[in-house]
Image 1 (cartoon, rainbow, N blue to C red):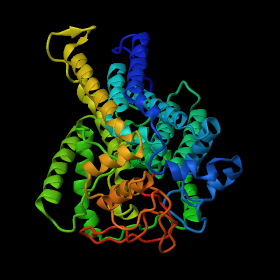
Image 2: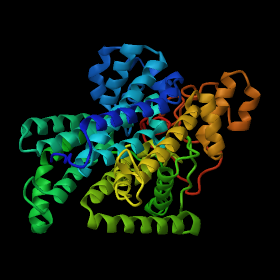
Image 3: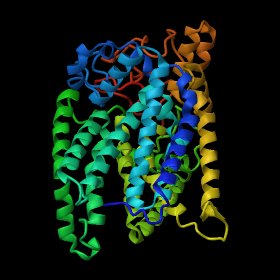
Image 4: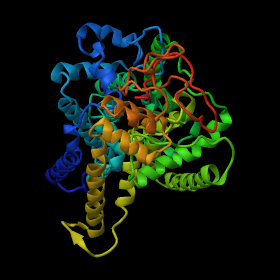
Length: 508
């Protein structure tokens, strides 16, 4: 579907504005280039021989993410493309964290550019697409995915995911070589699901797009019978579903199952907890301040006002409003699906470590839909007689104000990822009940020669290493943060972590 350029201004001015957005995004995140390796970077990069030599390349496809420490222990994460990315960076930069941070930031810039291209395709308006790219690129909710080297799984997945989707859209253009674009889309999708599991929602996105927009040149797809539209939409997604089936077979063979339960809890707890977690994400999307690597969202075991009724009511109002908008605007419907579809797998709280059910990086891919929704609302703001550079003044002023606030907030909050001491200290300030932040800070105190301070932060004996020196239990590797018995006080649901495999202290 070609983009209508009639209302967008010249290509030159649009290209300049896109370059400006990418430059401002780079400046906002540029501080991360000076940061150290943090969190799981030590275990997955510094101490992991699998990324130090190409001889391990075939094993990337036969081991889970943490399977190189013990190949007999399956896990929940099968990401060979991520391992290939780590190996490539090690070949280029060795153990110099600056190079790793630079390529992670570069991947975020690539995704920001792809968001612009997708928004231009969907909205048919370059300026609105530039606004969407600015919202996405500068948003502080992406700090975790950009400032943390191993957080690159999300930008890597998003780049391949959006690239596949754009190639699919290109294949619908009659004047182009549709088969070549479709083949490229399938290849990129295959890489995307091997980078991170949540990319498997792409077939759903493609079905929805075909349902909403139909075939090129057929007129209003809503005028066709629903049954025929559904069949045609699913027929388009068959090749993607076939790749998904192959991936599932590979995954089951490597990780010894589709998923493994890491925290036992009844379905009622999952149901009662979901509204508060979803509302947590909504708040961070709209008000991205006070962000951290650690949070302590509660498990909700029964209906109460603050943790269930209030967020459930707010979500119902929000979903109702989006539904009303989507029924009247197919661009809004598509953007809402881009926002919602990648979030649904996150509601299976059983696959996460105890207490680690909410992290900002999980919103990396969903925020593409959020940015396009913001652009849809932005382009309706055309009231008033003020004109700036030939555009409605309210649009220009709002863009400058929002972009400035997001950019400053990103630059300010990214400093908490400079090193582990700053990261753990800030995490404990934001989430004082987070056991991982306490344990990591206590171990860091021992490592830096202050063993008397370790007991202030976390219980038990501390070895002085944040990652891999504590003795394992029940088959867990040494230092595994999923190892049972790490909490001094159980959560309200009293879930206990179990199962084979080392997922790391939280999902990558």
